[in-house]
Amino acid sequence: MSLAAVLIVKNEEAHLRACLETLSWADEIVVVDAGSVDATRNIARAFTDKVVVEDDWQGFGVQRQRAEALVESDWILMIDADERVTPELSDSILAAVALNEPAIYTLPRLSWCFGAFIRHSGWYPDRVARLYPRQRAGYNASLVHEKLENPERLTVKPLQGDLLHFTYRDLRHYLEKSAHYAQAWAEQRAARGKRGSLAAGIGHGIGCFLRMYLFKAGFLDGRQGLLLALLSAHSTFAKYADLWVRTRTSPPPDDAPGR
Image (cartoon, rainbow, N blue to C red):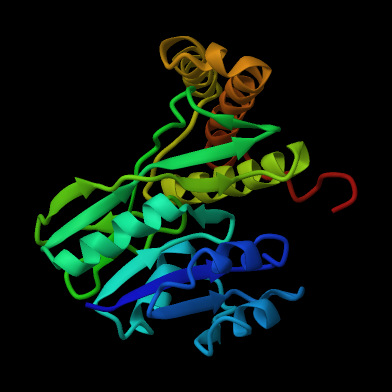
């Protein structure tokens, strides 16, 4: 059985080479670029001739579907540029593909954030479904937080070995990504007729902090755990605040000064 490692990328020159170097054992590598303006595509072409540009962004789900459509191999490993496959995990992946059982496999993801690997806070093992037979599963078309669909109800099995995730360069990077996800989340909810409230944002934000820092032992991650719990609470509030602004506030009147 053959295996394709599949990536969707944009401006990932800081991460892409290190990621692709951990995928040399794959039979096929497919990279779909969303319009990078850095060296991302040149780096990708050093590892594969399957580098395609799709810069009419329609969301993460659609971009992954475009990448899936380019694959010729039997199995797909979906991976992001800021991730690295450890040797133990690659052995586990290859063993699963060799068995060729009708199943979807989850990978345990270990994230590096603000100077430390986060082993609590609900972040580990953070199993993500990423290895699947090409013709029997695939991603949905969600704008953000896209998911691997399992229409045939294939068995879901765990793999061994960590998928390392180098998630945020710094605090600014965290805040930028958080704002992007909050915007996409609010857009999706508003499009479905949902309405937001600041009270809901406060409640969900507090709940997020308590869940991460206390119930999921974020305090064991030290200062990084405290910072992540606070930032996650803020991000949760921002989602609902964005939805509230979109659905419950009015534009300025036509006779407002400056209009």
